[in-house]
Image (cartoon, rainbow, N blue to C red; front, top):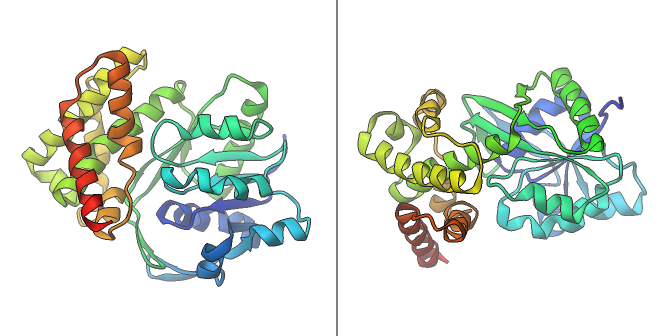
Length: 310
């Protein structure tokens, strides 16, 4: 089994910084942000603040990686928004090899298939990031819980060998992870959560603390989640009605003043991931003839908000 000795992180948002902080303890400067163009100029000094502590990260440009003929990273962690996935294909291409493990912590249920289609030579490990409450503003990241990563088995020996390598690496970094038996269920479960809490927070402006205490907000979230379960059942995915209730212990562990990523996007007047949430659910609902009126409404409200500040 090979040892992971280097990691390239694409995306210096909340999750990218969260995992860079953890991996840096093991890899030092061999854990770096990979970027290009204007984004490289913006973050090239690598200086950030995480929970009040100054952190310096190595930042590598795509151009430098190509011209120096540098060794390809053992691990690529992708932590961008869904609508930026197509844009970073050249970045991944510059760094990927047959030995590379790729982890995507993107929301939604589609990024692993996209990556497998574009990078069949790499080892794609299905990954779900859950239970964190990280909030990033400019170069400052704050969180009270870092959550855990769910990493899943694949139908190929190549990818499963990668699973053993990444498990050993996470343990060496002190990163909390699990390997569930049904990673597809885990991907849909996280998607269900995002469809509920992210979208309702974006529409209402509610922080996690509101979801802890206000029953009307909870019921709206639950309605959107139940529609996701209904579509999952039609698609043959093992989501269950009690998954909603089982989400509450995690929800209550999140900092009451912290906010979902979609609410942060709305407040910063950025494009949201609504197409990857209710947008994709609506497509599947039409395919399986399932009614999703709550998600149709949430989708239209969020798209209207985007239109108003675009």
